[in-house]
Image (cartoon, rainbow over all chains, first blue to last red; front, side, top):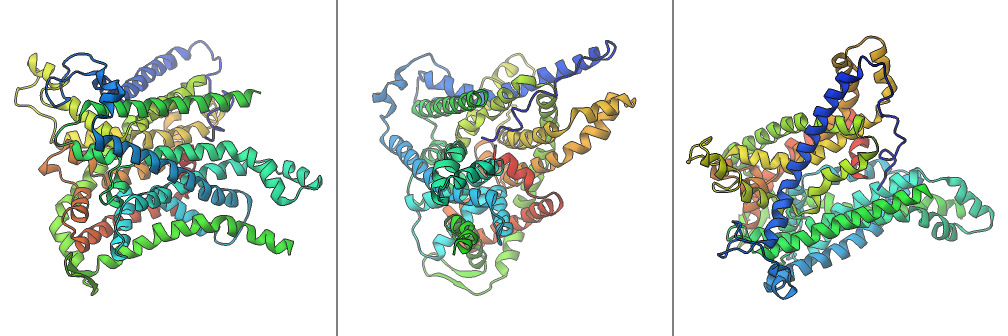
Length: 286
Length: 287
């Protein structure tokens, strides 16, 4: 993650001011502070509900009303009881792994080239990347399905991977480029002066420096893939991923197992984000 | 030889990814355009006959849903600006050491699947759910009152799901403002309100525009919120396109509708890119 703006020295902290003004400021600040927390709580409420209902012991088939606390859904035997749901989660994980690694490889190439070289066509590439980031998912999904229909290709696992790589590449490239731009070129020149070939220089000097960016690219691509619903819906055919299974089950009501799995994905995601964030901060201090 | 190698290097690096984007992003658009001008049916196949009537049929048949989607997205965007600006402002100017923490909290919903989040809201807002039930019990709301199935619920869901896309770009713009500029305006006797209007607001506008782009476009084409939180009377254009593609396999009408929607949104996207450049959106994407 590029944190140049986040970790800039705190020059925005209100400087000590003459005594007359700060009081009003403080009041406005407090109001805004409360307001910000209100918005954050609003954002978190549905997550809280999801987690809470993973501990619910519903009386009927539907996990709609709070009927009492239980841990039984967290037991693996119960959790993976619904076979096609477990299969869907597994499919989602595999797709996320493959597509994040692929898009990292392809996106790093683009990001590095854009950050390092000036070349003909970089403008067009920029426009295409901007388009994939800002295009509505619905249109990307619909157009991909149009292509597959025109070519008579049956959508399925492979087409989902193709689609996920497509919409992730630009994000990876943007992250890697942001890092490459800030790279100190003299380090590479030093390596060259010491007789390293460009190839050695890249793998021994440049790559280790941009590796954290590549890594955050992989994580972002993974997150985008495992949560994606719209594009997947269009390119899945009869393959079912975790979000697609949920979508299919909405009308009949979701079983508590979905809440447990959702909570697990949430927990792991938050944990990884926190760990990488702490690590990058520690590195900055060192 | 070496010089040539150096000149070709960027192309080798860009080629695989660039090809991928070309084949699976640009080419599909052309395939969709072609499909929207074809005639036929699923059984006997489709043939390209430049059947422009697909477009007029699509517009006359689904005019209501298209306009409704744009109106919902517009209302949602206005609400988003009003909701997000104070939050972004507070984090940028008062967040201090905790800035990354607050941004992280705002991004928490992204760790839960979009569909699951929306379904969670349905659970909260049902007629006998934790919000409406108590209000009905104490008599604030009539027993017949319900929220699900109304435009309010759909727009509420849209605003909820796309809030971070508005807060982040505004925050990035506000964070860039040199506080000395604001101080200077205060030293020149501008009231806080005036300095906000004349200094902060103009500098924050690019962020607001980026946020509008990043939230209006997905909101206008969303179909999850109105499917989960809405009803027949809140059908949005995304739902029509989705069901025509995936349920009735009416590809020509579906692709014509997608193209119309894309054209409407693209005008906005490119007007934005021309006027303000692509940098802000890319920066937010790189976070």
